Image 1 (cartoon, one colour):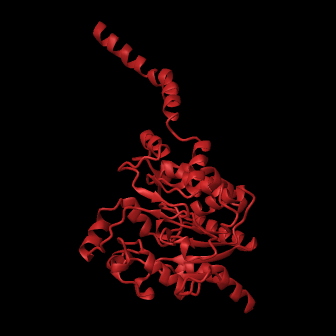
Image 2: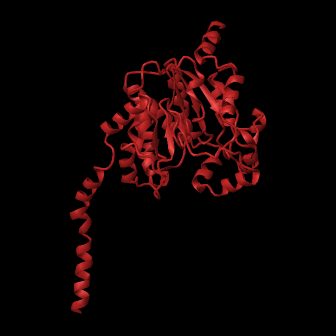
Image 3: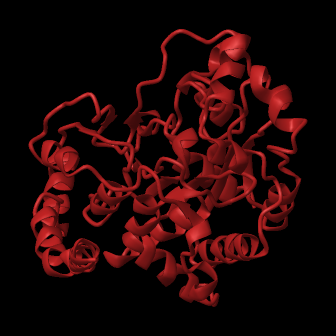
Length: 353
């Protein structure tokens, strides 16, 4: 009986360990995570011309850069990794900065725009990329990094932020604790295997995509080995009501402030097209209806048949190579084949009306 009582006492005492040591341990661990001033320092270094290697989560650094963008950067690329192939070097005016983030949704784009607005600025134009579902399932770290700006955007659009308040189902919990060592190495400008994405001063990201085009079998195998939550997002073509309302208010707000909007719908690899479409993915009818109602220029299509995209123009199942993206922009009149400035296109368009 004494042994049982002693064991019970020890078990109860163990419950107080997190209370006694949890706060000091948390405080100690946080010293290894970059503060806002450290992110701003790193952003200044990047914007001054020095590339940096980062982990998957890129929102915090992109936000820090947006707070300090040079005044000549008046156009933003907003979206997900499918928009990272848009190279600001294609625009001779040097006025474009690529703010696309991994797994970016409309809520991320609106949040990053709020960061840009914090500096008292509004872009002259945006190239906006998004999936038919409009929002994505994120890890806790990804979701929390821009949370206050998502809520601010919702309030601006007259939407109850509670509709976008995070719930356990809104993000997945595994792989969400950021490795303090990675942040330490990031601040030291180290290049470890886990820091495998290169971010350039113009916001361009260079993930470790394969250089050689994949075979059809390899593409389908790649799809089947992807995180099921990522695939589930790609198979959702009907946005939830709150996401669709957010999208409408976001577009209306941009146009009300005179921001020129170009919607970019990058195609899917032909090898993966049947897989996604037969399961309900990448139906663009709903988003096209919203864009057409606002006379927004649409570049491309999710359909590789509509865009004439070929398998060798993709890195994997959904990420287009730069040559394909450049061709789509050029064919839509946004760029000429020689890289005419996007601002010139709009000047000509406005003068014709």
